[in-house]
Length: 263
Image (cartoon, rainbow, N blue to C red; front, side):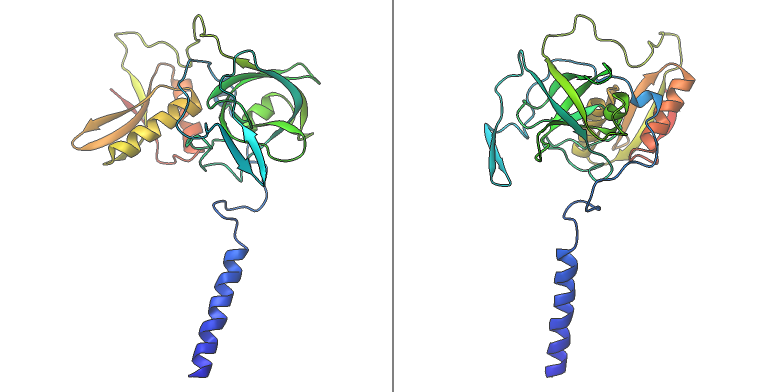
């Protein structure tokens, strides 16, 4: 009997040790570089638009590692100079601070104080390259860095080799006069091409996925019901090469079963 209980205790210690060595909600202990470069469709700037503050990530103040941070009421006239870094594979597919899903190939960013979401123009002061990103996460919480950029945003600013860059970030808060179209306009007499991302019986999951795709990829997405099933579809998409490019992006970014359809 004693040996039996000793074995049980030993097994419990092994399990506890394994738990202490895991990475919490992440599969990696340290961040890493993606295995591929961004596609052309993943290098389009985020399209600024007026959005309500998200339910998540907008408390007046919050605490991380014993330090308190205040969230600004507004991003109007906000600008800041400092060091930018980027975050990638470790966080890809996990929730951001405002409840969306982090896509390292999207044009997004993390900031400690700005309201979520906020659109920013980020300028690499070392080479004058710029990118427009949508802030939907909190961080970075180490050293003197002011912003964490997605992998695609960092690629577009040409800062992957150095890992960091001196940047100027400026909030975009005015309503755009005319937002550029991400997809080519479809004529009324054309067969409309779509990408079906996946199907589910859950309306909540379908709407959440459509919203996340629309926000992260800057693409029109909707959940259409048929025969009791909700189908998350992206489009309409006019050009065949554009459709293939977007389909490849979706397949490699967490939707491997996506396929094209005509309606």
